[in-house]
Amino acid sequence: MAIDSLEKNTALSRANVYFRAHKIRSFIGLALVLALTIAASSIAGFDLIAGIESFPKAFGWMANNFVPNQDSLSNAPRIMQKLLETVFVAIVSTVIGAVIALALALLGARSTGGNAVISALIRTFASVLRNIPIVAWAIIFLFSFGASTFTGFLALALGSIGLLTRAFMESIDETSQSTVEALKASGASRVQIIFQAVLPSVLPQIVSWVLYMIETNIRDATLVGLLTNSGIGFAFSIYYKSMQYTSAGLTVLSIVIVIVLLELVSNKLRRLIL
Amino acid sequence: MSKTPKIQRGALIPLRQPNVSRTTLSLTLGGLMVLSIVGLFFLDIKGANPWQAMIKALEDMGKMFFQPVIEHFDWQDIPLDLLITLSMAFLTTLIGAICALFLALLSARNIGNKYLSGPISSFVALIRAVPTVLWVLIFAVSAGLGSVAAVVGMSFHSAGYLVKAYTESFEELDDGVIEALKAGGAGWWSIVFQAVLPASMSYLISWTFLRFEINFVQAVALGAAAGAGGIGFNLQMAAGHYANIREVGTFTWIILVTAIIFELVATRLKEKTRLLL
Image 1 (cartoon, chains in turn red, yellow):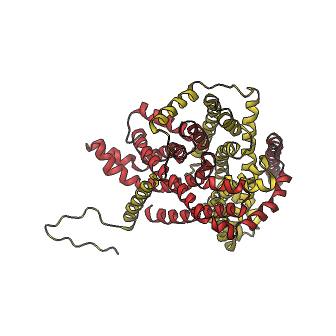
Image 2: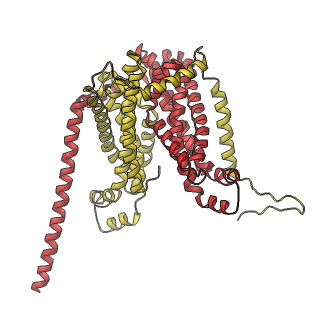
């Protein structure tokens, strides 16, 4: 009896120690996050109160200006045209980027490439492309290609190549390693392996990635358009700066509609393909 | 029951049978090809000579990558500028994560409210559909251009992204555990704090860090495009104001190295939690 209760006591105290340690750890974690938040706020000049205070006015702005009126509807054709420009630039840059990325990925993937040096080079190249922000690419190409849609196209295409090369490489290595080995053992040539086995099996994933990338690129194209004076970003900034807020509101609304539609379509396609 | 096609004597045996997924795939590929060809007509370089421009672009890249300089900025200020961008990314991620946690707990099908799940995910899809820079500019109407509008505007997108990610992490949890706790009489809060959060913590951390990585890039972009300060603003000044490609090179290098370090950490975290992305 005595020993039994003693055991119970030690177990209880052990549990207490565990929970106390757990509490202390959570407390230290929270304190650390809080300290970092205060430091970051003062470094960046961010004021939480001012941020919260800006909400009513920003939402009021949206409520007022997202409802189209005479003024904004007269600008609707121009907004549509700029929107089309952005959507198409996003699609071309994604598709061309994807074609280049696929070639690079086939050369660099473990199962289809084979040469370790080339593979390492391609990985580094892709990493540099995707880790330089698209905005930086746009700023760089403004020097040579000026404020034009081509600058935006190049920036988006390079970013897409960087991201898709890595994504495709991972898809290729995940889906086709064993098949490739079997085909190699039976004497199939590299071209045969790529076209008969690898591509058919990774194509659904590739298309899924491309659809995702188009969506991202439309959003990024808006941002890039602000810098390169083209597309929907430029339209927004003109209306915004000239205080034609209802037209600016209609511009935002049109982007939202396009992206939501695109997301619905690509989700549907993805479900059918994958 | 699938129908087996009748094969006539002497006829070729069809190696591939048509099915929905293959047809959709070819149609999608064809559609994308047509759209890209149409899209080519939207590209213009405003009368510049393409070959000259291409050669200049290559020369520029050589200069920026191999001869970076600092001429118009102080060396001592640059770490602080990088810190400003990192701070904006941190604050945005934190605010986004806190909002997302609550919304995701409400919208996850296994622990949340079944009536709220649909509305929350549609609402979040709408928030994500507005490009970040437009959120920032909308908030700039009331808060003025600067870090307040930037952080608040970026937080919207962060929250939208993380709600989706967190909800999926919660929904992957074993339903048995939650049902057992419910059957044992545990309340909602204790289920969340004792089972749901501890079990999905590693996923949550990975997703949050991935978002931090994205937010760093966004903070750079907004510094350049929406006057939010930090290293992105320097980049824009070096290019737009001083037109110095070699100085652009310096800032590009700084951003590149920082981004690569974050990517390496994120890859590590992803491998640890076997996150699919």
